[in-house]
Length: 455
Image (cartoon, rainbow, N blue to C red; front, side, top):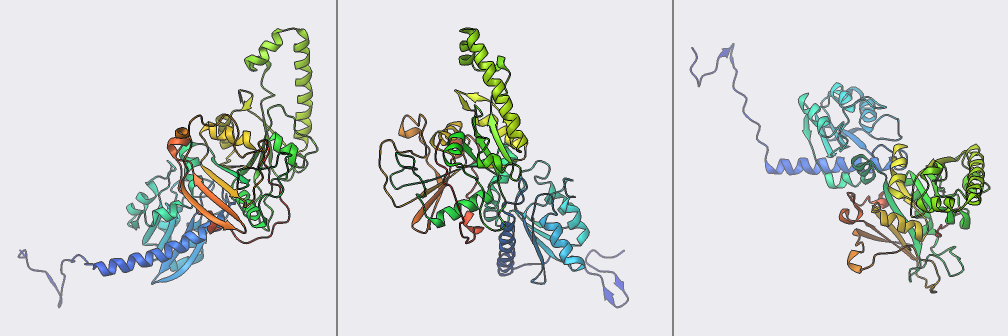
C-alpha cells in the first residue's frame, strides 16, 4: 500500500496531484480589461440592429482566441439568425477553445431560430462572457446554467449596466406585456407647440427634425390623434436612406379620418392602424349614448344611420389597406391601457407618441409613459390660446407632478433636446435605463417632415 504522501511511479515519471492554479490580482485585472474591450465591441455591434429586430432584443457577439477577434456579429433582423449563431458560423472550426462575448444571455429554447446554447456547445467554445440577463421566463438564468452544465466557463453580469442600455424596450415588453411608450414634442422656449393660429412649421431646425426621423426608425410604431391627422395630413415616415418604417397608428374614436389622407392612401405600403370604438355592439355603448337613445325613435334612427355610414367608411378604409382596430373608450376618449394590450398582442413592442396636447395627457394620465423627448427651440411664441405639448386636466398640485429621472441633454443645431424617464412609482410600470439613443443615430439630411402637434 502506498503511503499517503507518496506518488506511484510509471516508468521514470511521477503522477502528482494537480495543484490549483493561482491567478494574481494583476492577471485578473488584465483579463477584465481585455474582457471589457471585447464586450464593448459586441455592444457597438448590437446597435446596428436598431429598428429591425423588434420584438426581439438587440444583441451583439464577438468570438476571441489568443487575444484575436475571430468573428463578430449582431442580430440583424427579426426572424433571422441570432448574433451568437452568426458569429460561430463565421469563426468555423477556429471557434474551438475560444471565448464568446455576448451582450445578452444566450437563448436555450426553440423559437423562430434554434437555441443558441446548442450552437455554442457544439462549437467547442470553452468560455462565455455574458452582459445582460434575459428576463424572458423561457431563458432567464437557464441559458447560462445550461452552458455551465456542459463544462463551459461562464462569466455573467459583465458590464451589465452598459449592456442593459441596449434593451429597455425589450425588457419592458417582456416583463409587463405592454409596449414601451415614448412621448415626443417640439416646443418653443415658452412651452408652445404652435401659434394661436395653429402655425407650427417649423419650430425646430433641420438637425432636430432629422433626429426625430431616427426616433421613428427606432420605435415599432408611431402614434397621433385624429386631430393631428386632419390638421397636418402627415405621412409619419422615417425619411432617410435605409430606414425601417414604423407602423402608423391614429386614435379616431368616431372614424372621422379622411379616406384621402396621406396615411390612408399609403396604407397599402406601410402598415396603418386606426383605433376606434364605433364597431362596438349598440348595447355596449356608453351610458350617455344610451340615454340619448331613450329620448325617442329619432335618436335611434340617427344613431343607426351614423353607424351604417361608419361601417361603409370602414370598408373603404380597409380596402385601402388600413387595419381598423376596435378598442374601448373612457370619458369619450380612446382608453390607453386596453389599446396598448391590443397592440402588444400584435407584437408591437414600442410606441412613439407624436400627438397633440390632449393625446399626450391621455397617455400621461394612464401612467403608461416610459420616456419623454422634449425638443426645445430658442424662440418665444406667446399667446394664451397657443397650443401646449400637454393639455387635459393636469396634475392639481405640484407635488403630484412627474419628476423625470436619468436626464440627458444634447444640442441639435440651435435647438436643445432633453430626454428623461418616468419613475416607476409615477408611471405604474418599471422604467428602464436610458437607451443611449445617440449611439446609433447617424448624420442624415431631411427631405421633408411634419411636426405633428395638434390633438
